[in-house]
Image (tube, rainbow, N blue to C red; front, side, top):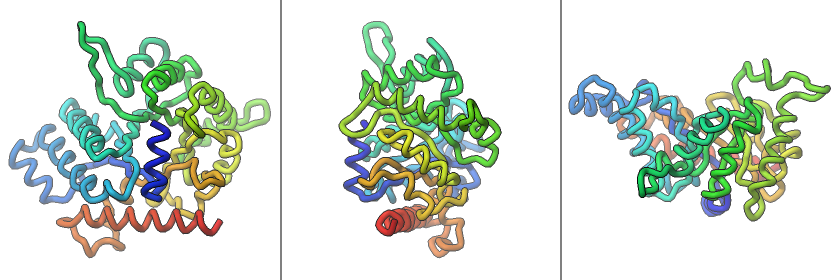
Length: 308
């Protein structure tokens, strides 16, 4: 799957991923009203609004981008109905031949971690049948429990030819409380990066590993260091746009081949119509606003890479 991601990035010339992280206050009123008229002001109604919102954004952007990243918490808050919307979103993105990164941030040990891996990347045996759960192409994993928590995911990735993005240095302001702590004179995130490189050596594709890393756009200097520590790991870069990252900050996340990183933007794209820059589209044309935001993001990042 890492090779498919690379090929789609090369084809679209867009090393970006759209974060499908819908909140109800992002969803235009006309979408909500229609869903609530059919299902009531219920969890089912909220899930329908989310699904219709996602579908419009996908329909307006799929030809420009290689991948999407739905954040499962935004769906879980609406219970089982929300998870149904998550599944419909994953399936629809696959119909559009998009790579799906399930932002699930799981991390446990033993059979629990193996169950997460089976449910999101692999399959389960049900009697004589083999069934697939959410069936994303990549997932995000928290490495805090060490190799015991990561190995079950690596094992499934080997079998299924799918991928991981391991949290190394996250974009949130308080990430340094733990991630920047010195261990034997070195910040913890560097040691985690070294482990990612080791885990990735077991799962190599043609030029990059199935095991990648999450490194926030808000820490470009740290990204420069981690790029050297993990030369074969694809880096998922959150924090673009709404969190302050911009194209010029991101060049160090990429290798000289122009590959090696994929940059995420969530509300900067899916709620673009709320921004002054795209206000001309209005709520009725929110999908077109999202498309314009994608085009601007691609131009920003490609321009920065060409001028580095």
